[in-house]
Image 1 (cartoon, rainbow, N blue to C red):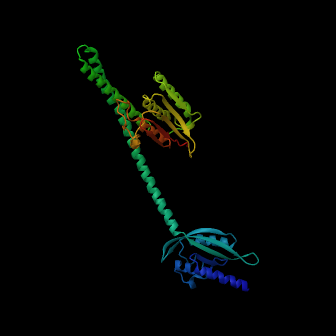
Image 2 (spheres, rainbow, N blue to C red):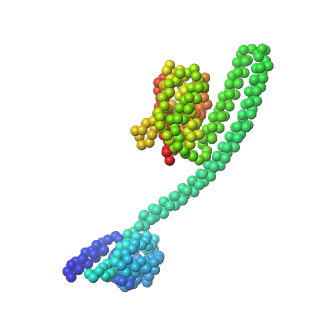
Image 3 (cartoon, rainbow, N blue to C red):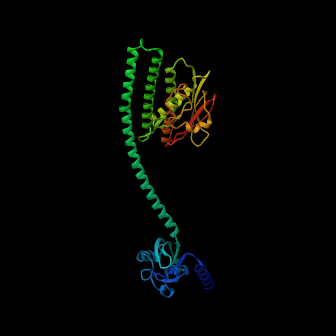
Length: 373
């Protein structure tokens, strides 16, 4: 008896000082004890609360549902429920309540103990997060719509570039060719030089248009990944470069066994741009070397193309991957200024990143990673 009384005294001491709701019910679901935390929340006098059921007297929004869980616990079925209370003092509160059957010496359920933890702050935070997510999803939807519209405008622009700009350039070239062909003897050397420079400018404009079309092409559509032998791709491109200029002697070093998941046609455009850059900028090297390799000491493989060409000043590194940014004059090294921007776009669309290091007169290295998923 003394142990029972001591246990009850300890229970009441803990319950009276607990910030959680603590209620004890008899087997009919009637309150036989409520702690001060419950009294403060419900604003129901203790004299009214004791002997009443939640269905008869409570500030719960769904008292009957709670009463059903309570009676189930009285039959020996413990449970956990989430309830909403409309408190006169504290407003809307959300509690997680654990219903525990209390057993007597004979093992039969004698009463039910309910312990309620206030989840209001957490629930409000979750609701705010849900609202923010909904707002974000709406913004993404609108942004996607705007992007789709921009892509359609870009496609219309590409059509205009392809048909409306190329045609007059071809016309200009045609007339210049006719002038040079029909008046070669009557034109002085200076006039012929000017016309040939005009032809070269037309050729450069056509190259720029082709580069812009390619740049816009790699920016659209879904990435379709398949197993791709990157080493074999590099070898084929290196062979094509050698065949296109057989008088050049370039030592290629190509790491074997680099197989990745990527969209082959897009990746080939990127690799061709990287190798073509290395080929172009090693033209003055006494013993030109171009290396394709892979670093495996990081979390994911890092691939690289290294050359011993003219290199570049690292203070300009941030400009390298921007469209039309050139560090060398066209007269020294021809090009459109779109190649590395195209590389960055393709690598980014594969979930990877690309960067470069270099030193003037020593060479340059372009590194890139690819997300395998």
